[in-house]
View 1: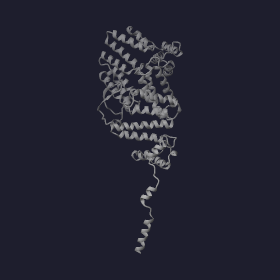
View 2: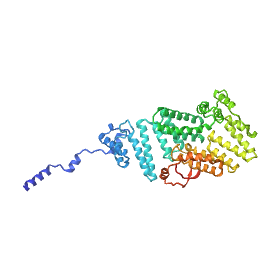
View 3: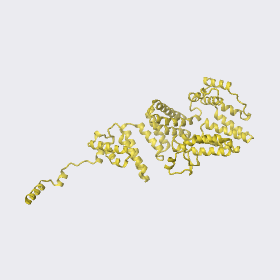
Length: 470
């Protein structure tokens, strides 16, 4: 029996092909990397000889990614990306997810050189999306968005601005929603710095406003468009401080409803009248005629001090720059320090309300405070300047826009500390804005603590104390 079994084993061994012969005779399977070179940067599932493997890897990595398991998903994504970079050819999924992966690795990486390599790869994915899907407007917008928010040292403001312009020029009224807030901010900044002409600023202001209006009217993604609408119009108000930027129609559409809802209020009448005049409405304009009549019928104007009469007249007629010049002259001539202070504070208010120049408004408010001891009103105004700076110093929401409340509350506290007459108004503003400070969670996430000294940047540039919303 044993002999027969031994003979059977010898026969099986003799009939079994040698392992080396089997390997040498089998066809070699191309590596994933070698297939990637032949498929090309825009290859799809249909273009790769290993379609099933690519599709299976796609399904597996997408499932991991939905669960937030980046480490487990990445090897499968790599396979799917290399075998079929453009996935099904209809969606940019593999490139977009590649950006997600490399953003995830970038956030964890500590080596500056490797972080730069990861950014390079992210922008390579953007270029591939543009090449394979002809999404030039989208890609330019995404690049600009990332450079504005995430990789600020990677490009100059001019380069970012050009990308935003390319995005909105390419896509027009279908421009990507996410470009509107940062593009608006950088447009205002470049104009105020003298880097672009009024004509160019007007061109892109109109495109931004038109895209926003279309988004609001679409009825889609209401929450998203509401966030944009909270920021863009307020940031564009900076252009109201530029004579001739907006025309009569703009000011009429924006400010006339204030008068129509309160036709007997002299402050409103003067405000709207001045705005329309500033916007270039002529004396024959029917709305100006109506406002002038309402002023005559409802408003008894006390005779202004003789040395400031021309200043008050200029202010009521919307000649804001002339009013500032005349109030400055009146202040310089005044022997009474209280009068000097009053005129200087009026200049501050013109810069704040009409010319939208916050640094100049603060400058004159502080000058006014120097001429009148224990006067809280200038500090009430500076607090409002700071609290209104959310759209100037951040995107309108979130940390950068919230921290401006801290120095604002400092100024309101200062106002009521030195001037009991200012306490009621100061408390009103504090109660209104305390809810808009950062949350305890936001403070903790930044490894900060309540009560800690913190310097608020932007145009404010002041030290303050960290406080949480209440």
